Length: 257
Ligand SMILES: [Zn+2]
Image (tube, rainbow, N blue to C red; front, side, top):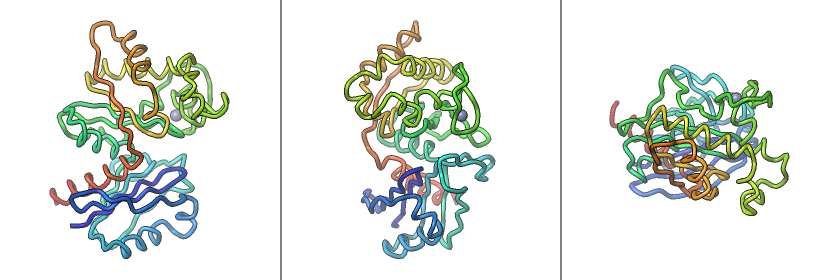
């Protein structure tokens, strides 16, 4: 069985093929794929790779399996393919792959890139609630900064890559260590500590910004707000984690159908 895993992000679409192992099949600009039609774009890759099923991880909020909102995509992707397809929120795919790699039975996976996404695994299973459980990027943390979702004062409006640009080059902000003295970093760590008090889970960080954070610094500040417990906090340095997770989500859906 050859399963295609597709990560539809705000900037790029990453593709992997799973046949027992994962193989990268390239990265494509999101805008171009949408302008040529997202279903046609995926159809072409299916043909090229000979895949028999497709897993899609998209930067989309789903409610009762219906896409409802995608602030970072050119349009809401209505996926319609003529082969078995599983569609899931991108951060949920990341959480599934994080569970596959780290094997924590309970985990909160957090991706920090342009925005902040998160997915929850409880007792080894993805927890969706009624659809968009785990959106810690949209927790209210104070103030009135405008968020990509239209809300104000959400974590993503302070600590997402888009928000941090006001301090200059975000990559440099991380590599120089300046990010750790920002109030926004403390906000991020406080949200993590609060989430752990809700879930009592391990934390897996990912995304272009999240995977490069200094874990010592993250632990130091999170544990300051934890009093009694010190949850495991790890990073997954894999830019294809969402696409790989999408393959696993598809594999599971096929095994259950
Ligand atoms: Zn928001």
